[in-house]
Length: 269
Image (cartoon, rainbow, N blue to C red; front, side, top):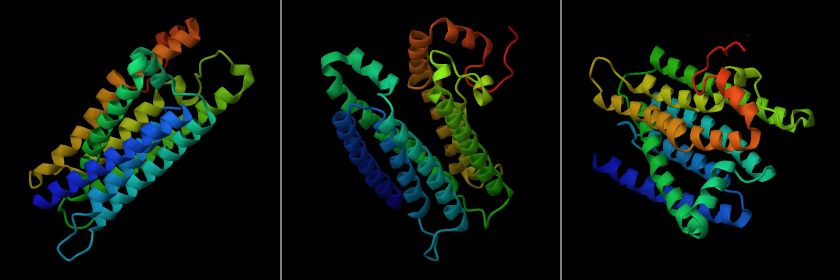
């Protein structure tokens, strides 16, 4: 137990440093979206460390630890690259821009502490990766493959949603319109929904219904926390406020017929 506490402390310090760099990057570029790229990188690195650092008795990581480390690496690489590309080529993230306007002259100081809070949230999420990787079940079984399949489906869905939105926004004919095609026809935030699904993959691997591995239940904290963050804090509320301000009645009509988070057939006009 002492070993994992030391690892957690080191990973927490690492994430504080990463988000400190994120603060510098968003100040230098004027694009706060870089913070999300740094955060995703931090979560990915933390997940790999938590998966591989608690070595098996024979001195090497288990097959489950390797699988889980691969899962979190692929997720982080894809999302980090997507966010970095968006931050490099696009304007400031409207969610962060709204926060900076609200904070006024205190924006620089508050942004620093806001990002440091995200550093600790990154560690908290990555602990679910640890719970999955250290499940002592011998070998890999159907639950491991089910968790990996769920994460793969979620990443593919999130990629499809991001690509659809990007292509829609690039078309001059769509200026002022709301993207309501593909997955966006079924959910106002399909990318957020798929991101939430990613974190459901780890409880599938971690939980042991026999009660032999109680730490596995800790993995449920990640999808619960991610749902709360996306739906009630920094995801849906801030983005929908921006969309209502920029798209007006078109977005209100979209809200009336389209599910906010969970995919569902759109309502008839």
